[in-house]
Length: 336
Image 1 (cartoon, rainbow, N blue to C red):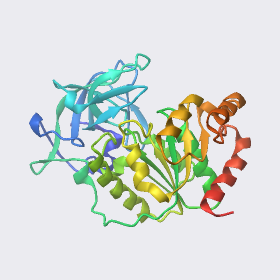
Image 2 (image 1 turned 120 degrees about the vertical axis):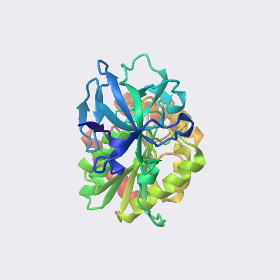
Image 3 (image 1 turned 90 degrees about the vertical axis):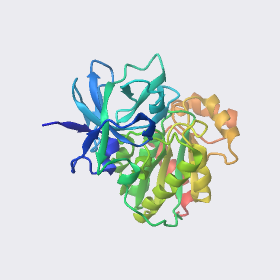
């Protein structure tokens, strides 16, 4: 009996519950979001774990068949790649969530990625199973929910940690909070951590049928509209939304900010370096309401942020800052 390992990008599908055929599909017809199966060829690597639909990490072994999807990643600090760069049947797990493609650029500080060999596409009734055709139909809903938006100067700037803190504080205040990751590359555990912090529902772009937000602007707008409708359907009082990576990177963060527009009632900028705050501040018409992240780990960093930009800054790792953050959030939401 063939055993498949289902990665977390399959969580919106029924692949684990219903049988499918494994078909070697014509390369000319491959598309982003196609579900494919890769055989692990080398598990003696740094990143040999696959994130399952539950968010649990599972170490795989040579010969295991992993179900993931074709996609692209453009991480400034880790790896860049896409399925279009595949010139043979060999490819990489660009993220542990099952985002598959060939690495085209990689940080020298990043360990080795999981290597796989293409075994075929998941097919049913003569057609490939894709992320998009796995989604339920959903009527468009008006999105008029206040949004706490978290952006960063780069990946690993402290956005998810800050988001968890905000979700926790708002949940403790009695609000129904939805947690969302609007841009980035597939990884479920980030938004799951929002649920751990008290969010009543969590979403990311995978729930809208894309494995990452590296896509055309028009496609991203369509997918974001669907995602916002799904969030609105759950009826939250407020959404804590993270734009993965930086809005200036090719993840369409700028479009996410434009679409949310007046729904944004509070904007938190996470930065790893005080000087990077100046660059992001100058790139957008709206100034962030608060700066956090690695740039604020010490009083010297906080003072430098204030000196360079005039913006308030807090070290959210310090619980003594939470009362001030809570007050700022309540003012933004008009619930004082």
